[in-house]
Image 1 (cartoon, rainbow, N blue to C red):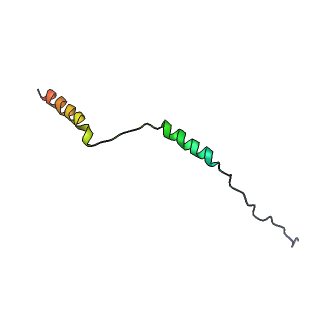
Image 2: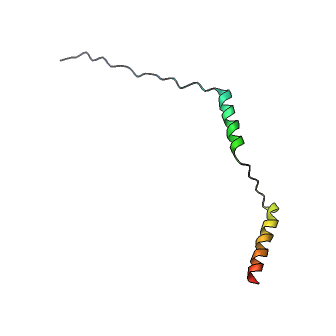
Image 3: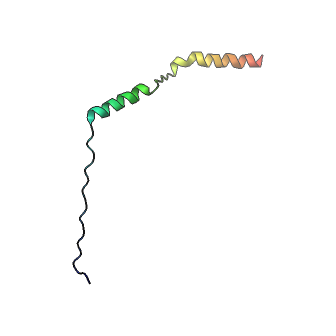
Length: 60
C-alpha cells in the first residue's frame, strides 16, 4: 500500500495581456458600424400631422 501520494499543486494561469490600442480600435469600428438614430418628441409634429390627415381621408 502506498502511503506517499504526490499531488500536483494548482497551476496558475496568466490572463492574456490586452492591447489597449487594439481595444480602442475595436470600439471605434463598432461605433462607426452602428446607425445613428435621432429621436425628438417635439420634432415629430409633421409625422403626427400626416397620420391625422390620413385618418381624416379614410373617414371621408
